[in-house]
Image (cartoon, rainbow, N blue to C red; front, side, top):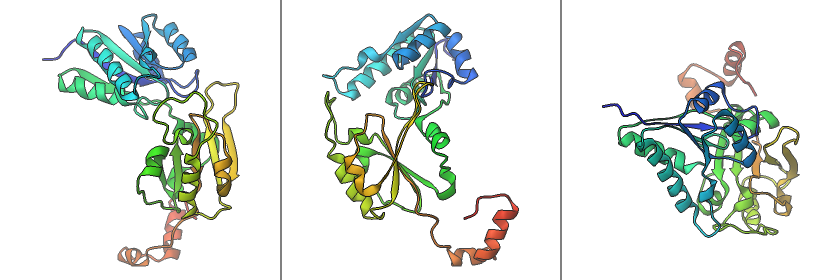
Length: 273
């Protein structure tokens, strides 16, 4: 039996204006209530679309773990749906990227038999591709959260572009008011130096959050990474060293040689070296 309440999770984009899709704007306007985890400026824009917009940032507290905050957001979202409302939960950026309560609320509500869906939004990675002109499909791409990266035994493929998120928060498990030193960057730099040359150029990137301020795009050499002063939204982009050697044996199974393979790519307007 279909229930009355429903949930649609949406993203408001990275910039405060112009990055919501038309579909997202439509579901916000038609919702019974909008529960938002966005910046103050974005909240103002949401309230213009739907006056019944409630901010959930109240659940963030420096003395409370993020996990508890996320659980409270999830509970609030679920309870509004259980009350029979058409609920929109709006999150900054893409609602499924670095967002725990969106996924958890959808899973819980679907288990209970409610309609729950997620609409795509503009993420920081989308902005990164546009601002830096780096196509993740050309060489391949590996993407990590910075703290996980330094504490896990990942295998780095230097032939792929590396995107390492939140480099300003490595091993910061509690909110710190004054972050003047970032020892995690030394560890991160040293890990990357095992596969990249010291002079390899990397990029510190931060997407623009307001239209009048450009994105942060600082190019440096890898060996100087520990001198960087990052913010909480800084991302490290490590461009690829280039494509690896061809797998001649696998090519032969398809009747191809490197030269013929290049010809086929060109004929089909695909990316070549």
